[in-house]
Length: 460
Image 1 (cartoon, rainbow, N blue to C red):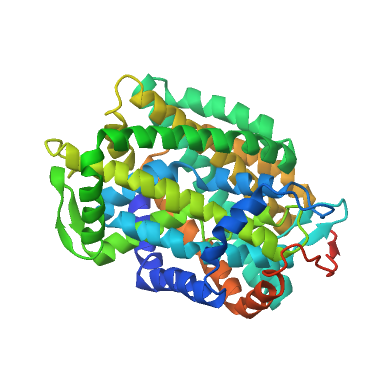
Image 2: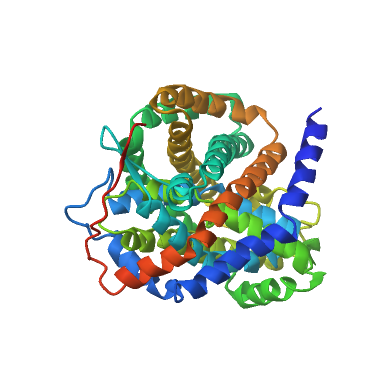
């Protein structure tokens, strides 16, 4: 039964992640790069703004809180297991496509965050709500597409948000610490319950503290491995670039699969990792205290820089250099990215597994928190305040059962709903590209200019 379901989902993904989706996603990244005047050049401005308060601005959480909550959702298992899975299925060349998705995806993350803030609304109790659903409804009068996006994102929150992450936590604890998965599911559910029922301010507060520490901890582990593999860094980069475009062999039985498969898995895992084009992170960007949409859009776009351009690239080089350094280890039959990552971190004497376990647990747990907020906002868009508590209960329940589901089905579901979310969101970005350009031209030279537009109050 499970194998039939997995085969059906895989068949759907083969259609969703075919050439049209790759062209739509990567094409939007390129188009918005040009349309915004190569907004990637303002990345360091965005980093500076992320730690600078925007005084006397409306919103629920700080700009840094919005960024770290978004980063909590993106710096997760996609950076660790996802990159390994991309290499296992698409060859080392998938790392380059994953990285390019991040570099050009900065422009799309900027664009989708801008329209999320511009078209956000205020509830009667003073909370800010925004995202692709509001941009589609208020900016384009396409409420039916907004509803579709909200449905896809709501369902995705259970896949990419709770089940993939909790499954990863349970798997790594069961493999390395011999703790039964169901126990991990119950413990995670209790911890998530304590945070999620505190609302966005509680989620943001936890993420502000967790994200810098967990990212730094993981990066230090990667740097140690790169020092160990120092003589294989340049060869690994050359292998990644070569096998991104041509089929061929690498060490340990790992082969390049050619441009189509490398691009498919690299772009798909890049989207899973940085979520540029998916429309998820802009949901929390809309809650930030900010005067104008460009300011928060610049801050939000730095999330893709940190997530993919830095962390995913480092992970990819760590994995490929480890494979090249240990050619006697045959990885040709490996399809689970966690196995590749475990082999790489196993090179660090004594503490390698501990670093990996702590990194995966922290990343996955924070991702679960961020996606709880995304799903809740989409549920509220669809059904109002009355559905928030039932959604939270179902979300926590999904965490409990996640370790009992096979990882392959969970990953396949995550890929499917990532694509379904991306389609209406990219429609909003492309059709509102003229608005994005005008707002960019208006604010980019005076980032502290106050936006005089009234934010409408809605009965939600």
